[in-house]
Image (cartoon, rainbow, N blue to C red):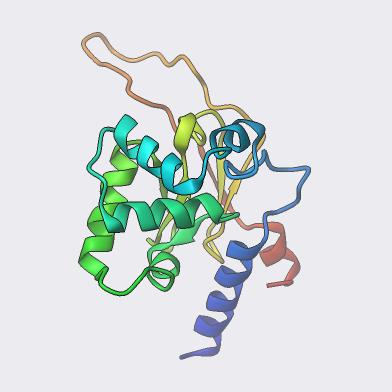
Amino acid sequence: MSATGEARKKAQKASVEKPLTAAATPPHPAKSAAAQSVLALPIDIQVRQWLADAPLRVTTARTSVLKLMAKASDWLTHNDIEAQMPAGIDRVTLYRTLDALAEAGLLARSVGADRVGRYSLAVGGYHRNHAHFHCDQCGGVFCLPMPTPQETSVPGGFSVQSVELSVRGQCNRCLTGAA
């Protein structure tokens, strides 16, 4: 692997481990007050409830992913998730599981300039009401304290399902060379 490739991998790992700053980002869903009340139930029961509310079938892959995401403190890539899955959950099953959970609104999916999908827990609508910053260098995704526009003007005959606001550039870690 080239030196640039190694630097990018190191920066991606660092971006998964820590947010920009605590003051600059809203709480991650697993740490927010609303999520703490939702997570007050034992995780096995809570995951089953999320799937029933979606409504999605309860499978080993879905429950494993949701349990992992409920504990995660930041966005995870497919590879991050795959490395922590129990034996018997293959790559294709994991891709389909992530797609199904994202479509059901249980996970948020974000694809950066590096074309790598990153996932975060999105139960209760988390990730729908604020913007995200995508670092084009390390691939990190950071929640921003700016709300997404709730009302949008669209031509007649159009229907808005959701609004996402993404800001792209370089994070402070990449700009200062701390990565």
